[in-house]
Length: 512
Image (cartoon, rainbow, N blue to C red):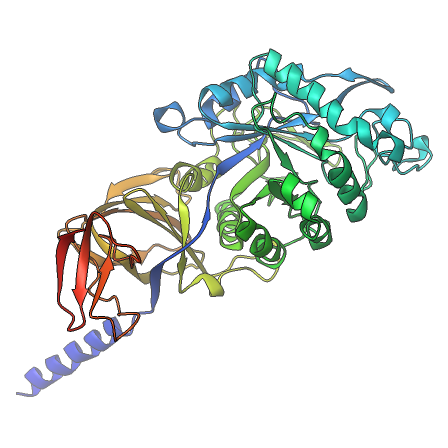
């Protein structure tokens, strides 16, 4: 009897320990946020040099389906003069043309960003920014008497690209207008950007160039004053289609989100167009570095971004290896893993988002308010986001701790099957393992043990045979009947096949 009681106590103790295992609950609502246009990077590697005919990098990174393992679809190219010796020569747009053609042929988006307008348009007479002794420390700005020349100059770029079989999707006003540089650059104050757009943006020939869109200037730190100035002016609001910027030293949820909250309701897009979480480092990014990148991607989505564009595509700290030593503090460092044009682990982190989230609409979750690092470079323990695309619900889950943790996912409607993409940084297994989820019957909940230091992407497939409205509450208790679509979303004007629910809680399928 004593042995029995002792065994029972031990068993109860084990059960209690199991029951006490930490768990995070993720509840996904039907509240829809922004639609995601995609992910990409800049058409350059090493000192802003475009790829030219060297198209292996872009070919591996861009395209849907089997065309690419990574699935990028947005390419940023420079609209700037070539530099030879001490003189700025003619504008060289040819270097990015082969890459742009590949992206366009694979259904992608190509946009151009000026690092500087022509030197003879500027106060310092050169395309350089002016921040160096040999340039006399002259701040290079667009001359007011040349504002009217700016958009016609962009038209010449659009014409050249179209004549060479690339129809540009968008053009930006300026790279980092708030950063005084010694290389190619041009400074604008917020009110100067407003004057340029308000008075002269109508000169961009949208009709001839297939409705090309205007992107705001792209500040170094997603500075709110640059966007507020445009958003407060009606003409500027009508002209600017995409509000863009960079996040060097500026966390997405603190700086992008306030802009997105104003721009998205106006039908505008919000793009993060340049950043690298660990650029110019003297080591190959480790898995901790790459999880920081995953969290940045996730935070940009939670902040309201509709597009995320990385910095270099090819670098040892980017998506594709260079095959060259890294020069750092006067020394050359060789990385055996940095093989020419081989996909790097960071590319597979990007694929979780690029392959699955592009074209989806973000859904609100109960964990959104908890996301976001307080400072750049430090991991947050857990992050989540959710999206709907067609008949699938996509869930991102990042566990940046050294321990496993249970995750209970509650979906907005029933699902019948699913797939998991898992990355743990363990290259001996796979940079991205894919497996079917063991869902045996229709359900709206899924319990999963998140591995330590992992990036997890779930793709749940909707069960169209389920009404999925068991937990939907009537909006007005006085209504005798309410109607929902097969996802459980309330219909103000029911039509087609839908679910009729009565005040007593009973429901049935009807055709309206």
